[in-house]
Length: 298
Image 1 (cartoon, rainbow, N blue to C red):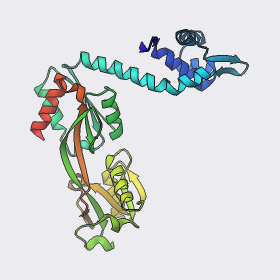
Image 2: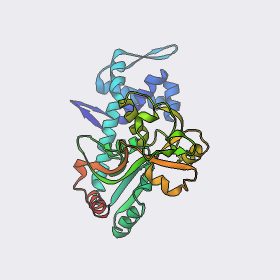
Image 3: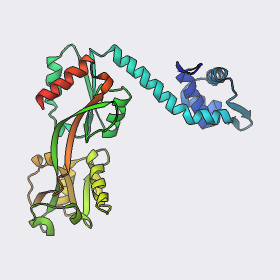
Image 4: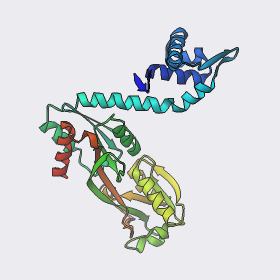
């Protein structure tokens, strides 16, 4: 139950309310929630009793939300998220010494060896370590909502209540195919790629946002002709002269670079990997041990 002033709200009732509000129908909302219309109506009545208001008026077409319902709907998602964060935090508190859930942004294991996570697991066998890969922003959201104890992300996370440390860094390069006017250069500047066809890692990678912002700061929007999650595909497209590819330095280890040249950016664009966790979890044993382990081994 979530307490607001003297009112206690159940998240189940709030979710029921949201479904009815969006479907404008008890029957359709019940199907969406996989419950009976009678059960759903009971949840709505409980919420109306708690709030001392009418939320829906019945019509021939279904139900019509009242002004009170419109007000509640605008705040319902925030309330549900707040309560879920509390639930996650309490669960995290109970498991603080025995469970460590790690979220890794796509691509970080190309820079931070996965062997580190394996070593930590082997050396701390009483801690149940779980890890998964997510888009960079999702890792941050899961850490903030206490769905993860530790996040390994790309790019600095400037957020109150978040502790972070830099774990690794790699330079960003521009792949240029043989025969292109840039092929004879030793480095490249952002201004020079203004009118070039460019191939990038897609939006799931923090590097995509960093590159776009760097170009916009210099007064132009880059001409992106292809995006992918596969660095090898970037190389192949560049080799086929489809465009110039923006790649993190670690992928160069996998390329032969035949008829392709990697140019560093004069502005030193970086792929920085950080470890991050909620500041209020600093003293949780599993978090503290893992953060200290990374500090000593990176």
